[in-house]
Image (cartoon, rainbow, N blue to C red; front, top):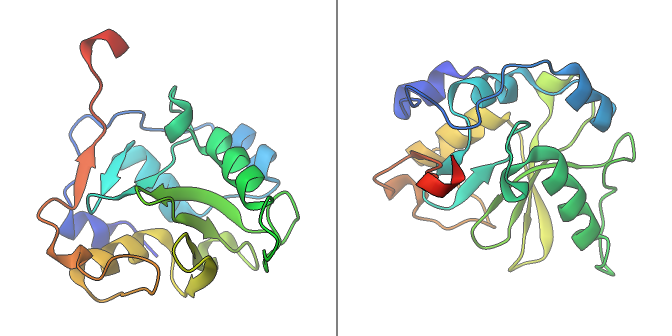
Length: 177
């Protein structure tokens, strides 16, 4: 679970938008646990943007609520708690899924925080199927696998490996500077 494989298929931007290099302690205190190292590396090197034209990983430092890790984690949790058939516990339960990203189609990405953070699998909640799918790898391996076609999921489009742009940094208008 390292960022090098992702960097081999998607060059990080020279000046990442909303990149975050710490301090991590206040962020981790909100979640009640350390976060995976590959996420920290991704936040520092890539910052905010879109992977494979549809997938956003929320950043700890984003001034935009739609891209902010803590704001979105609370928002996603509140929305999913409205469902009657939710089969997984959600953060802040110590073993509850921690939301960290989403797709343009309102599919949500989580970590399942059991064991050391660097061993947490990715869990996708697909809006279409309205069920959870576990992918047994970390975040950067997941993104790399989607980009290369080595990982296919039930909840995400089949053609992600054919996306010509693997990572597109967030672009802000002049009025947002």
